[in-house]
Image (cartoon, rainbow, N blue to C red):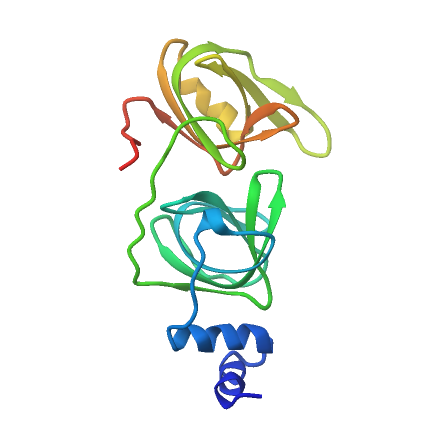
Length: 214
């Protein structure tokens, strides 16, 4: 084993394998090309990203982005204390396709570090694969539906510029602030089984806020 690789494994107390250590050594030498979000495929991932939203549940889940797009980050182990606005380096993660599209997962052998790197994200509107955003006039707001089971769930259907959107739990409650014909922006929606959903990773803003692509 290369001496630099061995030292890198020791630096991480044996929590990374030889392949991950090799990647870190190559990064240190300037030989590693970091991928953009839209370039990610299923498998291992190494990238820089900006944290746009953080949700604390059983696991930490966040929306992260770069200049090419946004996706979900799930942290299965470790408390990295990430917050909205941080730029992070994600090391030895794995990528898979989930219900919200592309997901970056960080587990026992992954690592997140805050990075002194500038990333300019942009918000684009329109339905697409993975996470997407919609803005426009509220055509209709339907009554909230309550579903009882192991856990109470609230779902509220709204129509924005002709798009039916099903808002879950807290996002459903937020619609109390809006009326029909208001302008609205809903960020980080996803499509599942032909329906558009907004859940805990989504954000809702009044339409006068500027989220134009820069």
